[in-house]
Length: 362
Ligand code: HEM
Image (tube, rainbow, N blue to C red; front, side, top):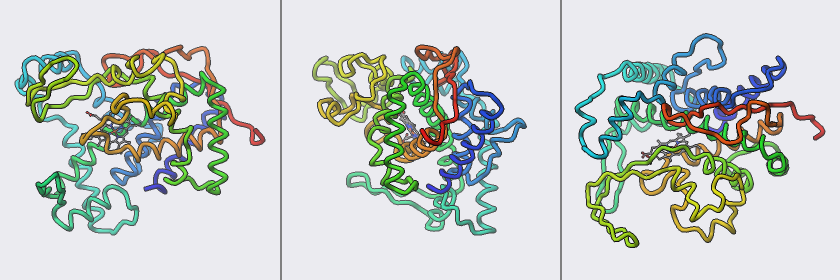
């Protein structure tokens, strides 16, 4: 999928150049980067060009926005579910039109691919190939799990890619650029690393280059950690477990909510958790931290399936962005990001920064 990601990066760079040339230098980054995030999902998950740069109203953007918005009633129900398990099903939300939208979309793509062979090697190609075998087999400890691969299964996986990938991609890149705008010294150190790794790989960055981008990885993880949104991860205890220090028994079947921001900003493990300091993620500093002192991509068997994909797409984006542009704080840049509780990870005042062209001899 690397060539597909690279194409999306190129599309976005041309777009940013165009708006800068039109003197629109101060930009709200979440909205700006969401075009790249949507282009990636369309291209890599659905195998489609979603025309994200067309000015007309885009149905996918509307869909993405509605999926990350939570009504006050829905928020209350989620809290109640914690105290009265099962209450969510009483308030069953009607089968909504979003489900039909995705089902039709995916079945059209599958039909098109059945008629004409594709060589994109995107998610749809991989799933259609897997479907020919009829099922996927997974070994979990001693048990063997067989999963039937049919159109419904492909639709739900593509949908998961969309929901899990879109918001996280646009937020994480916006956080990185926001922090770079506020920390010019870190920006120039990162730019130097990108230039030297690019030279080493003759400008062709892939997974090997990602492993060499030590400082990029520190900046990326720290930007997400410091701006960790106040949502929670949920798990159900699969067996009784005694929390040793608290002397508290978590019974099998209990719903456990894990605060994402609470863990990633726990002062016990992160000195000055509200400060941006990529050194927090240096090998030296990380080696003394216990497991799960950060849960950037969650942990355990239900952790983020897109970790490597996210690291690669963000690295390719930031590398190309910093080769072409620099970022600075502007009058609308806030000192710290404050989240809007109505959305999963939308900030109240936006993530505004100024983008400038980089001189070729810098
Ligand atoms: C920087 C970007 C990203 C971050 C910080 C991130 C973080 C996370 C976290 C914390 C979870 C766990 C949620 C939970 O435990 O309830 C998760 C789950 C997931 N993520 Fe990501 N993610 C990112 C990008 C992506 C991308 C680009 C994709 C798709 C390619 C993706 C696919 C998934 C999927 C499918 C799951 C669900 C796993 C499961 O429930 O088994 N993520 N992600």
